[in-house]
Amino acid sequence: NSFTAVAPASLTVAPTGPTTSTAPVISGTTTPGATVVITGPGPATLCTATADASGVFSCSVTVPAGPNTVTVTACTTGGCSTTTTSFTAVDPPTVAILSPATNGTATTTPTVSGTATPLASVTVLGPNSQSCVTTASSSGTYACASLTFAAGPNSVTAIASNAGGTSMPVVNSFTAIAPCTTPTMGGTATLSGGNSLTLCSPTNGGNINLTGQTGTVIRWETSTNNGGTWTPITSTAGLTTYSFTNAANQQQYRAVVNNGGSCADATAVPLTITTSASACSADCNYNAAVITK
Image 1 (cartoon, helix red, strand yellow):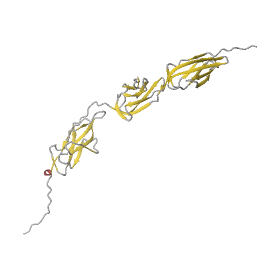
Image 2 (cartoon, rainbow, N blue to C red):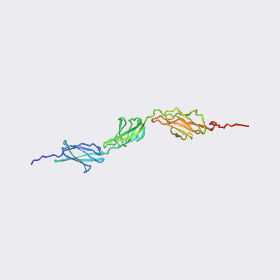
Image 3 (cartoon, helix red, strand yellow):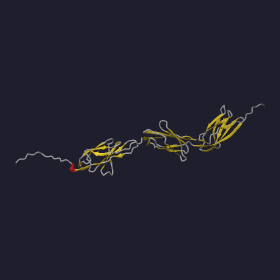
Image 4 (cartoon, rainbow, N blue to C red):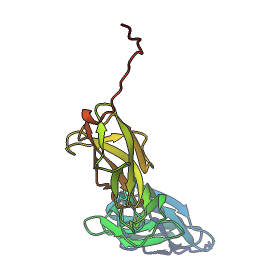
């Protein structure tokens, strides 16, 4: 009898590295046409493949996070060869942006910060192809301060990656506010006709002018308790002259001003109105009569 002796399948498994994802690709070379079975952890079969004409095989398997050892067996009619490969599988990372807060405000050069899987690589993406790459700390925090945003509505994106894969992108939308280059000045509120003018009580009226301000009037306010509390006056935004009627004695008026960007509000030096009944003009009405003897 004549026959052909066939040697057992050869087998070489490519290293996966010390850490990998929970869905690693196990690959290598064996005898062309060999059947490759990958099992583990334990006896569970993860994948069965056939080596191609060049003897190459590749299988994507799913394993739990943590240390793993899988067994690779390649068989032909001449016999089987077996080897193992060990690695630590890690889950894909997570990432979150904490600042700027979603729908919040920030400067045009904010520090973008948040949390991510410890030691993951974090890429932060801004406008005009800007990017910042950093590594999350061992406690799972990261920060990037190199991005610049135009004043107005903006968004920022963060993506984390490690041996376990890449996270889903997270996006926070916020409004960037321009820096305050010239601080707001509230100016002074003055009465047309002079601040020392005494008005009629209870019926009076007049104009209050704002001068010396830096910025735009966002509202006028009034107080009847010597500035203890101030009540906003509606529909007064943008007015540098406010017309009042029937002010009480010692009632006060002031403007609130802002110079835009991140500038703080400033209030004008208030005007105090003085009223008195003695300041009212006389109103004499009489009927003409005929005097006879």
